[in-house]
Image 1 (tube, rainbow, N blue to C red):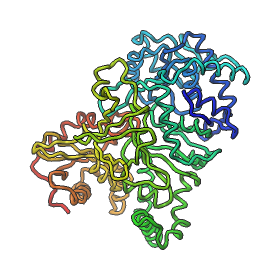
Image 2: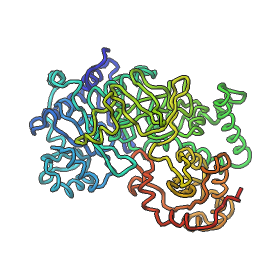
Image 3: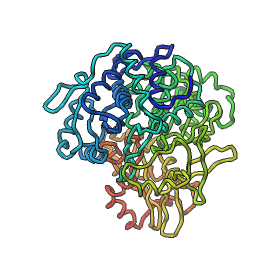
Image 4: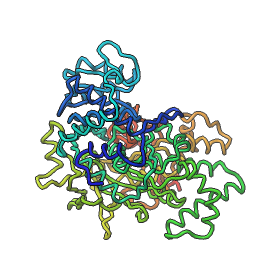
Length: 591
């Protein structure tokens, strides 16, 4: 097909594709299939209904909804009117939704259910521009419409004619969305992305991957996040069938849907990895020996660049089980949103699951780089996709330029100018390096670099990743900016710690009690000491504290893509951090 100009062209090609794609709702163990022609009719009918409510060119329509076919039906309906959507994470509180609606000036909002509707009821009075509230699942209440009641019934021929007429009125440079960054800081900004931003990035990223006709993709990362949204546009561009479920249902849905590809954040892969090693730690006798040897063989094959003796045998009895847990017919998967630890990537590649790590930001639509199928370099995020310029600034910051770069931040010209220069170079805020082949390695966030009181720069992410490699560690965050040494807050892995306790005949049900035991603190001290062994002295973690509560999205410590909000954690545990610098004792002698 010719390269599309707008997302409407992408949608038009998808619903006319010869391989008859569909959108499939597989939430809750069900299967509701919407063939492409029906999707087109629903998009057209909703677009006409929204137009009748006064929604038109340049208007903002907010979307507070989880992953399901209706997400894209609303998205494409809004886009066909020349309007732009404002996706909002369903996990946000009413107090967080309100500022987004107010700043964007959204005229309408589509919410998924009565739970989300309650948030809008709480804040509606403060959203002066909000005229229409529409609910997908639920009955109409006072001042609320249902999605079905808004849509005008249309047959297939009438729908296609209407959509074709709309396409002519929408231009590549028109805004398609305002994406409010979840961010690891407390200052969300509305990122302005155009049709051309999305189309360029989707087409370019898709060009470096194998996409046979008839493939099925599984979507479970939040569509409110730019990564899943862009990847889904690539699915539409390639004519794929898309199945939707929530992230907590992903494992079950994979076994049932048996997708050919999906996208996930590193924590998803880490949890699969942790589950394998949890099984190893609980195995006994011959089974434990087989699993250990299988993992060693898999990792060795990646290190050597070829499959050694025993790989094919272990493939039959161990590796095939890992692939079966992902549905059994994965062609490749994408990892993005945060750095993927090398040890996790090596394991998956060793068992013949091609996890391709990429890199980008909301402001870059998002893909800047991605590893290529068949020639991935683990530990890198791959080379730039075609048409994207990349360079490293003198201070190590990654800069990029091209059609993928945002127009700017909504109503924030000063903030835009701070990251986007007159020549079109966007400053990512990440520190990285390019190798001789043009593969990019991200080493840290520029703002996360810890500068100790002695003037030493410490990049925390790689050290945190190594701590999380232990089956005893769920999460770890380093601190030490303008302090004399580095300290860590460690969230224990409940599974790992309970397994350790059971092996020693200790009560395993109360994590809070366990982390107060001297022998538990000592075993975590050994984990930290092992990581410290390969670090420069100024980088080593001198002290740590175990915290019993896991970091969560709802608790505010994690972004919706599971990145730690370092500043939130620092504020929440300020008293503990202060005590770590007041105490005299450390565990440096443990080993």
